[in-house]
Length: 175
Image (cartoon, rainbow, N blue to C red; front, side, top):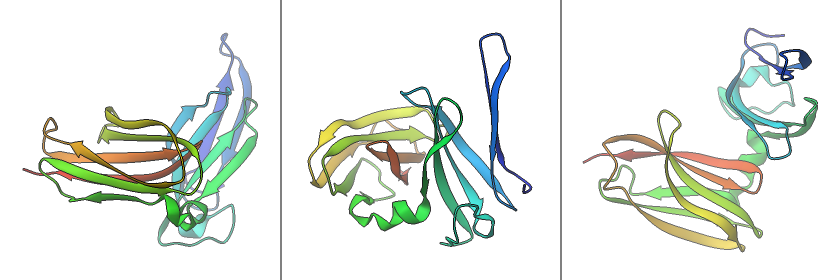
């Protein structure tokens, strides 16, 4: 195990341990978010030092990111690494102008019919707005977000396609 790793445990209603799991490589692997999934499992997203990669020899810079899907027993049922997400260039998120003062144009494309959620979060992770939440056919999409109700600062636009968090992008409001 490395310096920082992911360690999870699942407890029952009485506080008894049902299972424990750890993930990580020889250096730093830090979780940024852990959320429950609709099937009773969990989704963990985080980052790692590029030299610490336990999954493969992927190196896209000094820090890479990862997403792990685990079932109700803590068994890994899916792994998405930064190469897989970044190579899917048809699902890139674009924001312009950025910084913006009144409105921002948010654009993305999807390569197959899927359920899409496009949201904005503040720096504390609180949802500020849902721009779109529904099924879309393959194609390019553009939404104008009216930012007049937001204070100056940094926000994050989150694009989720299907069960994968595809892209987060910083949006700066500056008046």
